[in-house]
Image: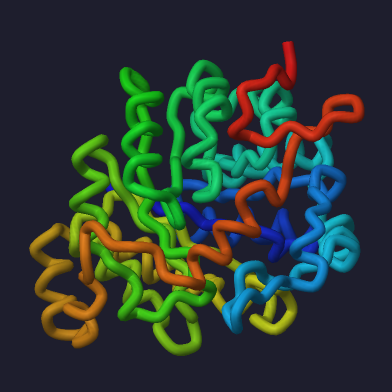
Length: 318
């Protein structure tokens, strides 16, 4: 049985009524999990190089993403601790599992107190080994994205997770992702470390629908994470890469097909399939390097006057 994760991201706009409706829509569509993101604007980090961006010898080496506008955008969308509890209760009523992405180690004790069966680790924290060690003793299962992560970092993460249940999710950190940049063959590489591999889909919905997710399942993914919205695409930052109810319902239906049925469908209906396969091992593109530089360290634990990044071997909590 494949797992379908409906990723709400910030498509709820911090509005409880919208998030509640998303829970019920995801449940009605048949998704396994309804997922939020447990980021807090106050844990956003200020880093000088992103205020104006940087260019060297005519080449961009840092994107422009100034702190203050990003903080002001994110702050209204914070999910409070109380909203996490309400979210979990609503998921239970709707008959769908709750899930979240953890962004800082300081949030781990609270998130673990919720008693959920799994937690998601974003691509940019696949190599945050202290975080992985702290999570694996508190959650039965980890979903770990691997976008913009080097092979040696993935291999070390797999060693950290030895003896514990986890899924590696292939992801491409180009937003939105062109079909010829998907490199679904990466699933073969990830399967060397865990029998459970999946795909986090960031393709453009208006152009590509759910064909990338279908192709990934045909290639052997047993987990699909897909951004989800109930609002018009233009209402939210992630709207263009977020599917709506009918598409989520269709994705769930495809997830119930056999491997052979999926392969036959792809052969007949998705002519772009072969260009999606790509390489199992490949260098990161310039866009992925730029995104890695910004997003890795975007949030950090603030302990007293000290900023502690997720990969640092420093104590964050008792």
